[in-house]
Length: 253
Image (cartoon, rainbow, N blue to C red; front, side, top):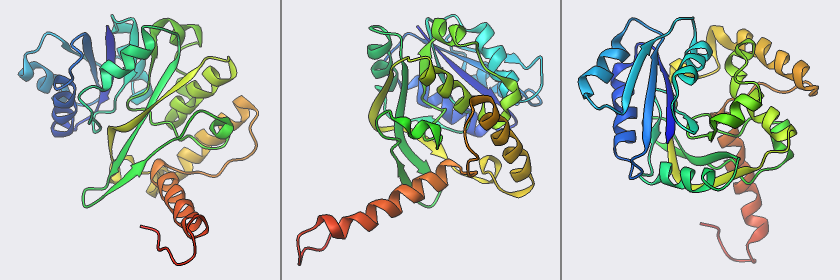
């Protein structure tokens, strides 16, 4: 079984859509463990859906990392998959594809998808595993899965990393030599909005977390980026290469 860990805070509409994307999955052996870090609206959403595969708990701690830790403590599956409350699994076979990998080996499975800006979408393709993980956090937290045993072997989640709890986990798995498996296709929908962007009054806080990550893993100073910046950089690089790859007189599409 796959335990889908969903922290939520005062976004009942988004949470309902995230859970609907789970209920459309063709793989039946999953549970959603929702931990409410807000005023209880998320628990109300889960109760209203009345599906035994969906369970909800209040956050005994504070913040999204501690909410994920509590979800992890409640997980009953052999594997766990992270999903933010405002994101979606777009491919109805996504959980099946994840399970097909994890039923055969201990690995970290991650996917690709789109960044949804509301008025347009940008493809997000992290690429095959490589040492880019030491420079950029291309792996989307939502849709990434690994065996529960492997997660515990790696030491669980580190709340001191704040926004970079996920990159810290990927780096520990990478340096421990565990395989990374990449699922291509329009698998995950990431909503990009003011609440989850690294600008405004949280820039300095995120920068401090990034500096902590660099110290912990012995990385050089890194530029603060989010997935939107990474997607735009990849798009710009692709467009700059296109003319050089086309024969004279051919206009790239």
